[in-house]
Image (cartoon, rainbow, N blue to C red; front, side, top):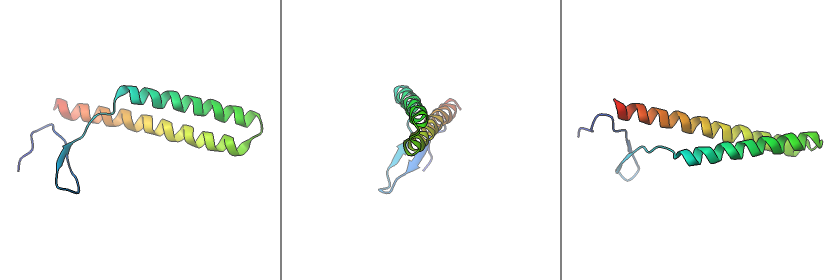
Amino acid sequence: MQHPVGLVMVLTGRGVLLEKVRIHPLIILTLIMSSISMGIYAYQNYTNQEMGYGILFTLLFIFLIGLVIFGLMRNRKIDNKKIK
């Protein structure tokens, strides 16, 4: 079976072909705002000598920034494949 050019298909467990979808920009924006707040919480906890909470919020900050970067890269990759 031939797939249309520029359409990325993924085979799921039930044998259904699905198109990859973009991550909505508002979701990426909320991830950015959440990561900034986690960074602020981490800084506040480090200044209050609460190292455990500081490490926790630093890890959450890194995780959320990673999700933002992944989302931006995924959207760009999907857009580039749709253009071709």
